[in-house]
Amino acid sequence: MADILEVEVGNAKAVSSPKTAEERFGQLPMPSLEYTEEVARETAPLYELVRHHIPEIEWPVHAPYVYAINKLKKQRNAVILAHNYQTPEIYHCVADIKGDSLQLAAEAGIVDEEIIIQCGVHFMAETSKLLNPEKTVLIPDSKAGCSLAESITGADIRLLREAHPGVPIITYVNTSAEVKAESDICCTSSNAVHVVESMGTDTVFLIPDEYLAQNIAKQTKVKILTWKGHCEVHERFTPEELLAYKAADPGLQIIGHPECPPEVVDVCDYSGSTAGMIEYARGQKPGARVMLVTECSMAANIEAEVKGVEFIKPCNLCPHMKRITLPKILDSLVYMREEVLVDPVLAKRAKRAVERMVNLKSN
Ligand code: 13P
Ligand code: SF4
Image (cartoon, rainbow, N blue to C red; front, top):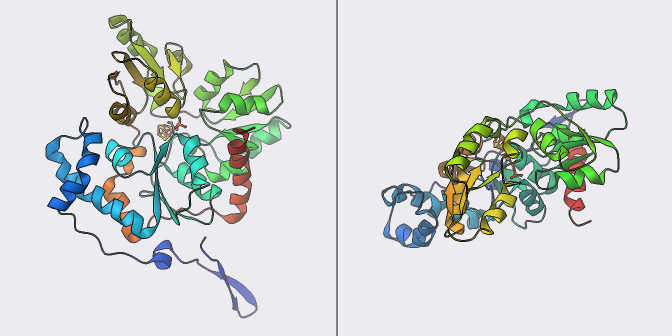
């Protein structure tokens, strides 16, 4: 972790700014981005995993980045954590660990490498830093936000607590560290029911995603109070569009993320986290047709892994996830940017809420 230096200035103590990641690790020379014979040969097996998505004529543009990133990753002793919504060339060609938000959080806490490059959105990088504060955590674009994380602040949570004393506050991991610090425990879409029921109360807050809360409320007797946050990607799906697909193809399996409005989840055959959706798709027999009601890269990523299943994709793009690109990942490795830091006092409290969730899994 960055050292904070205390310096005596006259009688007062001044806190000098900590060294940046670039100062601690130094820059590396930018590698050549030529599509050489060696690059073509070394990246050929990786191209097979994205062939369905990237035309052959475009591979010489991506391949030099893939080759350079995979080399520099070793040189820097870095590990790349990628969310399931990352583009196929990131997900299949440079990521070391892939998963939903719960899986990435659990893995972030135990990685050995010195540097974590988080390919996902900012709250995911903050969560990695909370769980493994000794590591240097970089995000290739710090503007990769999330409409849910932006919908609520720590001050909002303090007001809720004042107004509803004794009601546990469960926050979705799609929140800032400041919000996590005010929470009793975190949850993700894959463990929300478990977390709600683990609180041992009749009523809980599950915030800030109103739709996730409404979808979870249908699966438990615990009364759930919520907030007006929405995922700008999943709120756009409508039951009418899904029903039109189903009318045209009654055998179609529809699987949707629980950040979708409840009336959308109601017409789905399965709803779960991104990892849950992948598992469901893997369980389908060859010849099945599956519609994925979620972010666009999910279907592109699963297609390479689940053979014989046809995927129908009425998807919406997450503009925040799409800020992460191969050129920006390479810049992260070369220039050691953009470092994700969390105030240590805040981090201690936020970590408690995340760890409580991660540890609950094995209880
Ligand atoms: P998962 O935890 O299901 O991966 O969801 C994260 C997310 O941001 C979905 O929009
Ligand atoms: Fe946030 Fe929605 Fe994007 Fe997930 S898909 S990161 S919830 S805006």
